[in-house]
Length: 86
Image 1 (spheres, helix red, strand yellow):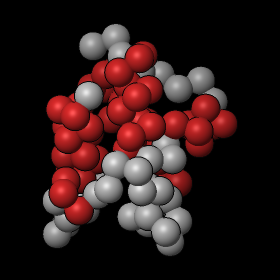
Image 2 (spheres, one colour):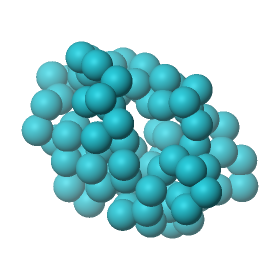
Image 3 (cartoon, rainbow, N blue to C red):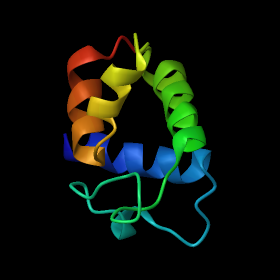
């Protein structure tokens, strides 16, 4: 799980062009959206959805599902670990 978490951090940094940020800068429990976290927005959420589909074969069914999953890197990793097809 730790390896998956690190890989997700790296993929998100690359996909979202978070220049100057390293995986160590992202707390796995920190919120991803809003001022309290790393400050992602709805466009970033779409990029993460594409990343999960392309790299892990995960298709989210609706926005509410994504909202629950995208609360933190830790939650994304748990979801990927349980639902990946690749």
